[in-house]
Length: 168
Image 1 (cartoon, rainbow, N blue to C red):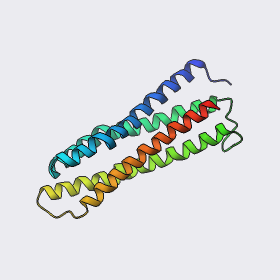
Image 2 (image 1 turned 180 degrees about the vertical axis):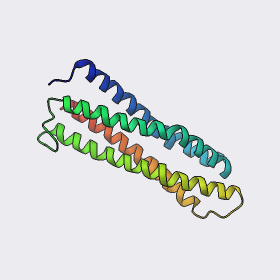
Image 3 (image 1 turned 45 degrees about the vertical axis):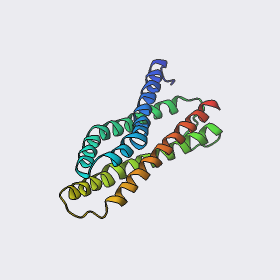
């Protein structure tokens, strides 16, 4: 059975919106917000900012990931080039497989940030704001920056793989 054109159109639209939201959010955070916050905020204000950002952006990012997964599966299954799970018989199939593996890495790095590094960083910043020692703070900041940058690079790779898959 062929996927109706209207359903595929909606899936493409949702997929593009979720991509813009997730990768755009990563770009703004890693290139603008986090570097500026590191340079201009004291530890207490940085902790408050991290908390506010996480409360607003995490649900959007995870919702985007779910939308990407669902809309992407519909698009893939509707493609005439899709020949079945792990049927790597064309450049398109290879690009889509690599894209999905990179997407999986992005999800793993996002989980590490959401439930590991950001809460630890927030706690360390609050400790410092209370005058307590938090020697882990600089290491956490480096890890935060690194994971955000890696995730942004992975997002750009996903976009490149999508472009390649659409061109073959």
